[in-house]
Image (cartoon, rainbow, N blue to C red):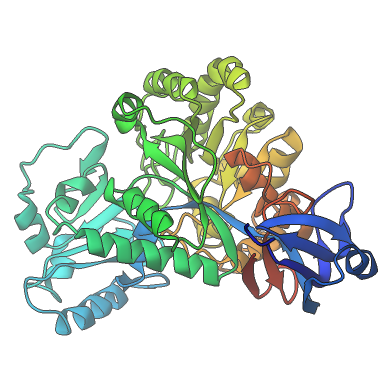
Length: 501
């Protein structure tokens, strides 16, 4: 006969996010589930022999969720060259040179995190700038948004990219050579050594472990990775080594194969397939976000549309018939308009199968499009506001008031789900709290201060919102039957650690 699961009472000031009982003093858990919520006296009477964990100096909330991350890529990035915060080309060169000094010749140097605007560049950088400091190591480094890469001449030569190489569909090779936009980055990335299965597993373990150490209990991993990445996460789950609950998306070009294999939405366990990923456009920093006229204020155009709306509609319908969520990256205002048009056509089927359509980023939106987000998931990343603020003022002054429009999206009836897009930005919940509450960018100036949220609203968007987006009614809330996955804080928006029982 199996012995009964041990019971534990958590003593802590508790924010439950349950409208029926918003606050409590104690939580009773057993078998990985919340059993009761109430006062210390009530739960002591209910379970007098339960183990007691005293956290009365801390705040207990539903567990943090990271609603947009490339989880295994993030794990790899932890060992790569970190260029976040680089303020000049010279600083990038110095960091590349230092890595080259400590790396055997011929070995690839990979990394990323820079922004063109922070480097003081108005034109795209060339291979010659990297050749100066790394002529004997192939170099491929990505901008922070991952929609632009910068390669040296050796990397381009190894990839067979020359001045005569035609632009790939959905991408651009900038001349003189060195910068590759959108799908053009893949021309060089395909020349990189293929990681082994053991390396993928190590990266998955590193990324998941880092998130758990920051207080996260779940994550939504957003495709844009080789098939070996989700396979490594599944392997960790099968070994009992995955410290997070993971909701995964697959690229839309693998949808037919997944259908033939019988893949459908599969709730349960620590790893599940849940969505199908599309890209409507690029990104702000790389000038590839798809915009309505007049486009970028510096005259660089209206960006690059990627997956055509007709394709998103066709394959989005196929995804819905499998019970999977269409998940579409849309940053520019034109991209958001086009995706909303597609989603208007998909809403009846989505409602029938019980799936909430989802927009990733929803970064720059026309005022007239905001009400159209009703009932959708708006998966947004407040931390990006901090670096993007100066670019928004310079490049999109006409959209400043509806950029990162969190309050307007919330009031329109969208479900907000907060993440970081790591490795684009670090998965730091404190930064998301600060950006969403203060609306201040890295220069100290405000972007659309009327769009600020309260700390409690941010907590909801970092816990309950992602749970609803994934179709998990048992997460992001503390009530009987919910998953016993919590975050402990010294203060809301401060230091955090996960507690999963």
